[in-house]
Image 1 (cartoon, one colour):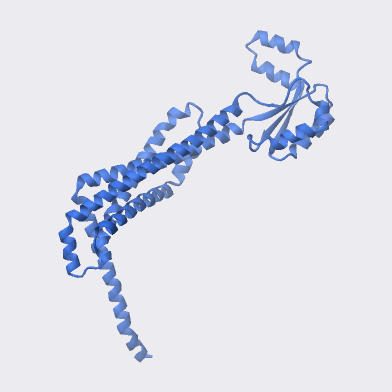
Image 2: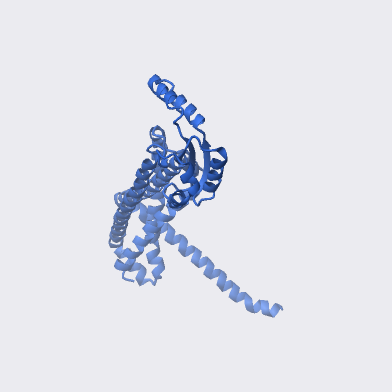
Length: 328
């Protein structure tokens, strides 16, 4: 047993030395990369600033999209279709129709409002308008009963439309003077907001792609200039037999630092902009709170994501530059 251990001992010693050597090599590359990062301050500031703008655009685009989607969901939950019924229809038939509609695909709930309840609602809504109140009293016997149908997706009314077209019971007790319709202008508002969501996605995507290309080119050019400025050092490293990874490593570390600092700046600036915009935009009824709460709860993940994107842009740009200009 001791003989085997004696045989393995040199192998373990060699492995330990290799591990220590790799650690020292990485530490040196990291130190050289940090030194390179601070050598040309103006190029460093330019590269970091452009990457920061890119990351801010990405963050604001994602947050804006989420807020608009929340707005669509919030308005959608308050929109329902009104199915008008003959005020003289029996409760039994109305309840039967209500049960049938509740079983239709995409229907979330159905609420019955009798003619008397509808009259009371109209009177409450127009209690300051004496002319309208008089008109409501005169039309008391002509106000229809209503089934208010809430849909899961208000843009999908195909199943409900088919039911209304085919249902004999509905044809029997419907109000012949009024067709089923959505309340007010909320459906059109949702359509407009849905268009804004698409616009935000397209516009944000275009801006993100544009600034990603710009920041990649700035990092690429910064690394290219760094290679030319240090060509004598690089040549010396080649002569003493330095590995390719050791020569290329500091430039990758330098680009990673651009991404890291840009991510920290962009996250701080992005959160600041979003929190500053909360109060003014909340006046328009936009549901900011769910998105803000998510941002607070998952701040760590957001920061890590921003760092990952920033470092990725930097490393890829640097790798392409070193492949092109480092003749190793």
